[in-house]
Image (tube, rainbow, N blue to C red):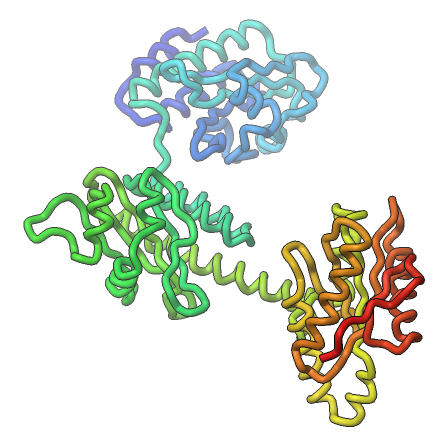
Length: 487
């Protein structure tokens, strides 16, 4: 064993961590003309194992997740992972490609030795070989991993991930998200990760154009979430041209008056940038800290880039949500349609406490033929609004046909279901639309299939129609059709 080489690795000439990793690989390659060995050094950075040095010109893998294969297992557990037998390792990472690039055969043995720096795991020394690895070489690998860890400690520890790289990791996550709440969570985490602030809030404009905090995090989250409207509007004005703004510490002239409440609440630093998409500002990203910290130009640039990605991600999520809502709803009334109703019925977990209600507008075809489709559409919208207004929390209404509506009602039993049907009928009368409705109600029995429940509700509906319309009937109760006062 070349002890001098190992001492040189541990105490060697000035250089950086990359030089130390390359030296470790060179030490492990010193085995005569044996080209079957493919040593590599992986260091942890940004939640992945990055290949800092490897024998040969081609890297088989880089950015390996800690959950992957023997390499990841060695890093997760801090234990050596050895596959020294001639049989191919079952979870070897594909370093065979690297071996193939040097003309070697497929992997027959694999060694993963953790590299420790000051007691902490810094990475893994990985060795792939097309032939069995003996104990002498295994000892060399352990000594090299130990010496490499000591050298990394001398050089100041494992390389820190640059803020720009951390931001890119967050941005990569944003591109895969569709839920606005999750996007907000990632944006705030990213903002705090690339600055020295400790709190942040995401502010969006509501349907009326008012700025409203939607998500806050950190020790000053409550303060930021309750920021007065004048403070938010002032910040929006300051960053409205695409700039960012920042205040920190005490100043003879004080902070702007609009931020007085924020400063009095414990914020010693504040920074903000607008959320711009398609040429318009849709909100704000505001950061605050309990101590006075500067916002260097580099950090301001990262925040501006993050805000641009956040605005784009939020706009995309809103567009996708609108498309899904459009695809799942009736364009005339905005209610769920036939397919949505059946999906909701199938997914209901409250049965037998979820009653099914089917509702038809009486004489709708004649009304449509007499007064035209425009009038018919107005009636449909009016009936939809009246029925919706009579629903209680947890109830859902759908338009399942031309003049047919269906509802899923949360009830305690058949009596309450019949009463709910009467309430919906009365709501249409009270709306003064000029039409009446016939309603059939069914309450599931045991594990009754959906088709059976719908068939019984439909039968109750047609019993109402057969007995003069404008009423409510409960499936299984043939005694009467519930009617109330007429409008």
